[in-house]
Length: 250
Image (cartoon, rainbow, N blue to C red):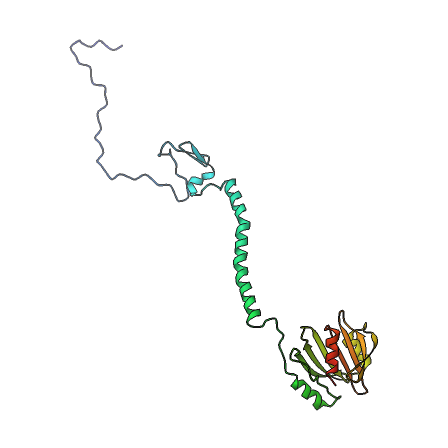
């Protein structure tokens, strides 16, 4: 036990002496988090808190950290439905925009440039070549009206002979050909009329006796057999037009 202190003595001060304060120095800014590291600490605005990648602010939650990346939420099902309802209409408008100029160009091509008309050729060079070859007597249709148009004319020397071919469009717009050849008929007729070509009887045209034949699909033919040449008039033209062409050969 400590001895009793006299009543007139003041008890000693038990508090620790104050240490001198450190001199003021430059304040250090708070250390910022490294790039890509999430900031730590409590949220500062309006009591917002970050938990498990969700931002909760004012009672609204955006999952997956959408607020941090700035991404907006996915569109609703109603927006998708409206978009799908507009798609067929948009496609129809796009097709219309493409088809209108195409139709105008097609009309211009047919109406002003004669796109549907076959090119007319001059048969004179082919006729001259056939006459110079002297492989067979050469005949050219005479007396046809202006509605007949020559669209093909060529002369070729092939194995076993030579062939002159003249192609026409009739006044009705159908096709007809005149084939004159020195190729033997047993080879020429199957090549021109197919193996199904069969004789159908004789007929007289311009003082000559022709043989009628069947030909490809809806075609028919008139065949003139001579000692030094075979003449075939064939096409899908009407019978009267084929007869007119064969008779024009003289």
